[in-house]
Image (cartoon, rainbow, N blue to C red; front, side, top):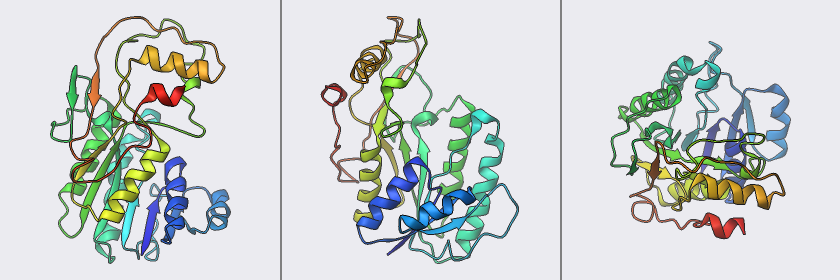
Length: 267
């Protein structure tokens, strides 16, 4: 089996290494020429790909069994409007390729904070630029009928290089301290993606978020203590919030979280 990963960043590179260990041939793209050697050293067939440039896309990169798209919309930096046009170029390339299975990486940010629990059956009502762009991208892929897309909506990403104990550094009076967290550790991001591939589950949407949602104040205070850093100061208030759970994992996708309780993990 050959899997191509568009975007070998924090998650994409770690996923690539895990799939290589499964005996899968990996092709991976980066926008940085300096990173090509790093990909090659890891055993990945490297490609330089910048979708913002109007250059022909390599047919070889799209010659694979499964395509994983892990490209952030960068809405906060003002590049959100370019995201869907970039993905339309990717779809054009898929249509000229043998690809029949796609995994699109999205975010639980497509759900607005409407003071409720949400699952994959909850209609998203994105109210941020990033959420709106991601939902438009999801709909774009959902409308395609020559290949099947499974969309993974990741919660907030933590793991190596993303220590939650360092979040909110130097801030005081942080609002909404009683709002629940919706996070996922890198190992579980990889585990869920591998499960989808191994179980051949395509054509669905998956919320990938650890099923434990302690208040922000409790979680980040404990995380800072574990990291040996100054404790964060949250306001003991509950403003807008959501709890992101999955009705799919454990049913359509058989998977058990490696981290299912943040308090235990932080101890």
